[in-house]
Image (cartoon, rainbow, N blue to C red; front, top):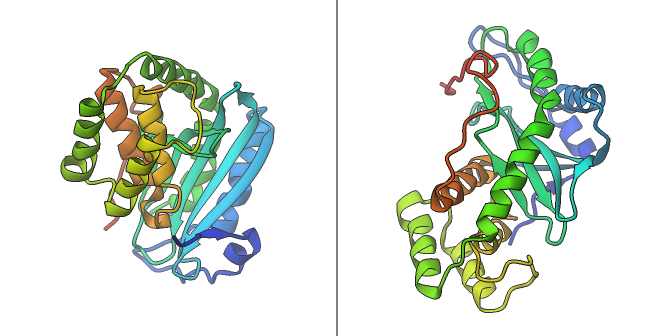
Length: 253
């Protein structure tokens, strides 16, 4: 399985495309600096920053874990996705990193935003990122509550099979490679998540299978997975941010 982990310097060296009337790039370097500064302004302590990329740096993800927003199992993670080839819109999302396996959990419900690379994106981005990150602690608390609910939901083999089937056939956010990993984890788990045969455990098997997916699919796939398992748990969540705080959501054209 291909490893997309990328050194910070490699992303900084990736050529930033020229600005046009209809396309205004935001550099990976600017996103790194803005995120780190916003983390500091929010009173958070950075633990790690990790980058993945593909297409010679034209597609990139940044993942920033927070040391002082954590419990015994997971810690807050702030992530962004960016592209230089117009294939993806700029996106931010809040999630968590699981300590025992380094799985990622990404929620699309908690003020996540995306923006196409046009208009006033260079002036839009800094304040949006600062406002977004400042409220991330509340999102972490809600994910903690969701985790505890999922741990109480027991699944027999039939229920596990039905959920895995839906993920691959109906929702299509996992493929055959991930399916094989999930099947292996169901038979012989690599890690102990402290909730055997629970919905939470199946969720972790799923994100474990997605650790090395292509960077262009990382954020969308993890948001889809989180939504799927919330739905399976019967959890109805409301965004932390009001629509006005989410700015406007645009699709890349």
